[in-house]
Figure (cartoon, rainbow, N blue to C red):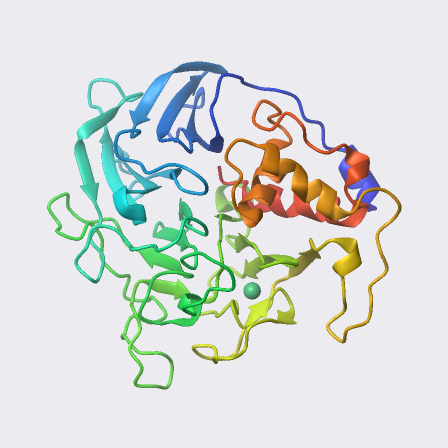
Length: 384
Ligand SMILES: [Ca+2]
């Protein structure tokens, strides 16, 4: 199928209005008529039969929102074991006071499942004893959380921010930043940490492979920059259970990483040593080899700046404004402060023109990058 044919099958129309910076929509696992919309500012809003129906959770008093910071995601705990009733517990991820990343557990109200029980909040406690993950900069928070087919909670964390990951966090085995985490939250409410490390996590023995270097056992994979959205190919809908991760590049190469089902984890996706399929900052070595390149990358650099790895100019896209025009548009969006997130907003915002009223005309985006951006964001964000 040609790219043109694939695009022709996509039709967008407004579904809902009245939202502020919606960044995720999640189906209620118990009620097909209900979805939850996560707003970056700190609210999770109920949509019932296609209509806004009130707040499920309002964390505006505790979420530090602005720029790329805010409330990122919600994930409902699956039943353990599957034939039992769901626990009513759910998890959210947000920026807390001071900029740290918080993963908090709540429970739905017993009296009204469309309202969260605010008194049930419990912030997970991480290996350093804190109930947040320190995150120095405003950008690259990651913050998506998804239950995998194995019913473990996967948490995507950005590299801590700034350009080119100055502390080399994504390759540091002793920080959770720049990693995908995998934890087992099927623990009693009274558990002090709120999770345990699955015994089959790739670094569950606490050492990098074939070394005596310590590593945090919560880590599932290394080398991510800002895995803003990821998801599993839904087994319940005939999917394979594979993991697809949308990750942003520094200035040129955005990527989609693919992890086959039952991979066992432990992959190193390469950031900051690699940007897409290309060498990037190599002054410090990666934590370990091999590095796994993406299954797909796309070039976001302005056409005039595009160079092949060997320094040869790459042909500019067809006539029309360069991709820089397309990526400059989202800076007019209210929250778009970081370039990588700006693009995320543009991609996601296309169906929601209320967020970003002046999205570029179709012709303003080079055909290839526009197609790939949508394809990647659709796949990466399909969980929500
Ligand atoms: Ca990579």
